Image (tube, rainbow, N blue to C red; front, side, top):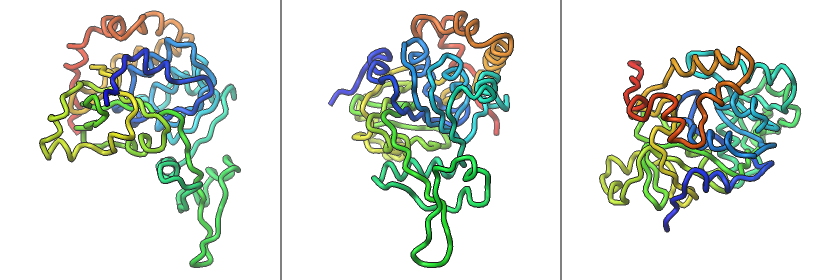
Length: 290
């Protein structure tokens, strides 16, 4: 089954009001090409679930988000993006801030068809007082109480990987697949962008097959998008563009994202990459040494 689509065709499958999971972690392997296509679209009122980076500030600042479920939001070396900080202070969106382990278990519960997962994460913290919808449950085996982390049901997940074939087999070649397998399995539809679209026999090599972390049936759409994680990293393909992150943050501090988007976003990915120096410049970004 051929699951190839263009960026525009893939994002056209997302509707106003949907719950959208975003894979990657911080500034690492975020599906930025797909997210830029959302920024170019008329989509709105999204509930976004993520271990976030700069993309959350961009989505919030452009009015795409109604509710945000997140564990943290560091644009890598910059601790907190100004657009994200401003939108939190304004109270303009509903937020659910939880522990990273709780987010992982919420995805797992959704993937396994369970209403919740019991966990000790969050016990004795303000996570529970700030999120009264998260309940405690009695253990049937002892006298302890546990946090009942509710399933995080996703309409769509957006992920970025190193390579994929047209059937939806995806390779993550970097040192960590983060929570992407959970996002893929928790969603009704999973849209994956990849640095390179490969023939299926690429995965006949056992070493490559061990870098596949979810079933191809969990992938609904595949989009070839080289450089698609920029300005974040896609280890081992390229590192994060910290200078560009600085430009983004400075523009936001000077009055919001409008000027930044007017200068860089472009009408499509080809125009975006031209505006940031080209695909060769992205692929030349150094990887971290530790």
